[in-house]
Length: 255
Ligand SMILES: C[S@@+](CC[C@H](N)C(=O)[O-])C[C@H]1O[C@@H](n2cnc3c(N)ncnc32)[C@H](O)[C@@H]1O
Image (cartoon, rainbow, N blue to C red; front, side):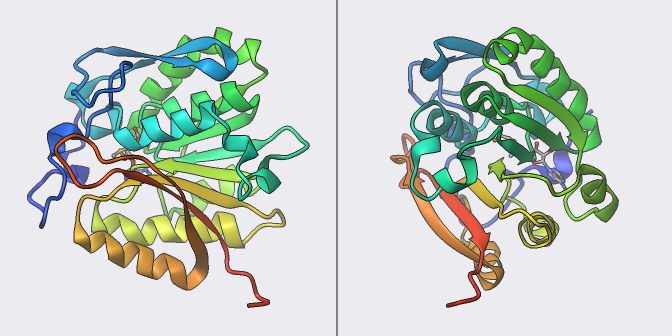
């Protein structure tokens, strides 16, 4: 099973990043593609490693992406102490929803490092590999008070969103802005979770800018959300651009 239709490499304009540098950095921190089936992440904050199975032959949803590595590193550092984020993570068992999880690495790392309850989501055909990775890391999750559920969430699908509910403190996403036909469904999803519920919720998104057209996504997003960059990674090898991490919150009405 492949998901070529969502392939971010397929003949788009102004490719500012060599697609072959888009695969995840290896543990040593260089930017080589990782042909490994299983990738180990050492999480220093909990002195444990998580292991993630990739199935690259099955398509982009089954691989690890640089933006995911950035989010994992942030989670493993002082993520919960970041001034813009601490309000969403303080004083309770945090509930997190991850969009477009792919391999599940970010959600699993979030559950383990924050002792959080995380729902990781993606298209239905991606879920078995995510569940495999959750099960693979069940010991680390248990030891650190984290829990991960896996659920189908196709962006913009009201029945999926309603089934998942709005009881989240934080949404996470890495490398989810890459194909223009997905901008509106993703924005509809963000409006549902960030604007519709009782809880004040934020979306933290790690993003590697590949194409100029992506500015259309941010332009639309800024009509509804306050968007700030909370972290920048240095550029990947051979490119001018690194991963940026954005925080989206509902626009404050008193502006
Ligand atoms: C480039 S991959 C990034 C995966 C993962 N977040 C990472 O950084 O390693 C984009 C992800 O978005 C998911 N995706 C694409 N279209 C989607 C949709 N309409 N609804 C939900 N997820 C979608 C894909 O299945 C894939 O897992």
